[in-house]
Length: 96
Image (cartoon, rainbow, N blue to C red; front, side):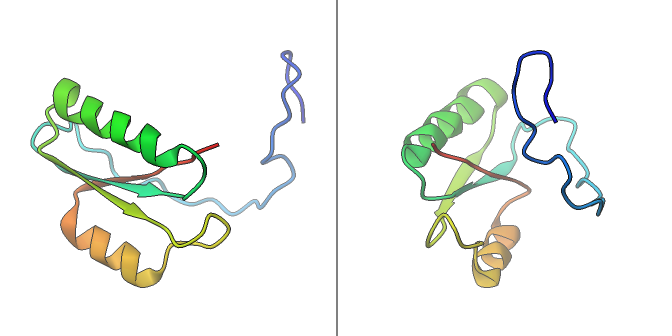
């Protein structure tokens, strides 16, 4: 599927499975945020920049960054469980 800008939608024709989105907090002030590094080039640099912005601009109390073993493998269940116990909000990051 393409749009007016000529970009290709990588999700076109994909699974029709719908996953409910996690509830979002009204703000991030005082929260512990987890960021998952996918190990691709510059992901660590991008995440450190995002972490600093989350702290300075949005009042995040703490940012915990975890790095997956390899970009082509999902994070281990143990890593996800550990992160879930420590954070209130989490995001997966994509380096290039």
